[in-house]
Image (tube, rainbow, N blue to C red; front, side, top):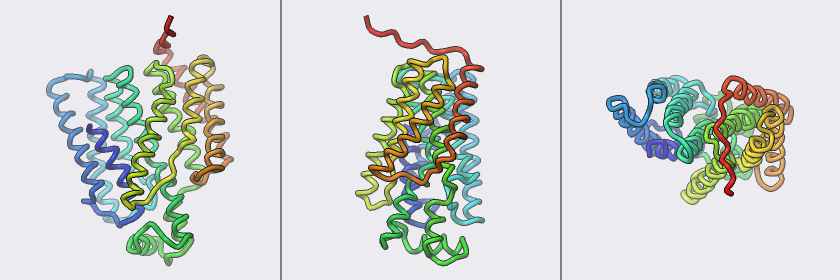
Length: 320
């Protein structure tokens, strides 16, 4: 429940910040805070009782909670001093993602089977979260060029003043798509896919990567429709991730001793998925020349996982 509240609050928060000026007590922040308080209460229970988690898992949860709580005042001070973060990739935001990730690592260690896969789905959502800026930015830019901006005039004026220029095409471009085009494909093809590799490996369940990704996309679809109905800014859904997830599951099944080949196939599937989604819908800007870097990085990560953590979760036997 704690991670569910944090996830819903975070998703709403991104859409909120593409429409209105930042407010410390905005409803999405309060919802996220409710999840954080519930997580703190559970950490306290585990600390005093030792129930549910071993010592290592408990330490991950405690350290993650501490990092997250430290990040909150740092983020507040950052906004007081620097105004808006014209990107989700700021250092103070990174501490929030990292703190949540550490908490989830502890919970994942203390779980198994389908429950572990569910917590990996929360991990996927948290790890993909920074890329939401580019996914929301696609429609923010389209709405501006169509003459019907999603952002309130006060938000655009504040962002323009912070950038030191008028509210014009260049300013909105910097507001909606503030990072280089290599960031999005590199993060999704390496960071997100490596999370799915870990999930597939440490659950031992067939189609784990595909199932987790499908669940995440279903959540994005439902939350996206609800936000759209409520007149909040909408986002592109990363449907192309499903192609990479299928490639991971097939690689584990048919190429278990060839992680580098699996990585190349996975990155290729992600880029093909981006191209196909771009033909039928929208995708954030992505640089084709990031393919080689993504392939090498994912191959290195996947190989290192096999090299330094050789223990494998047994593949479920087919029914007789």
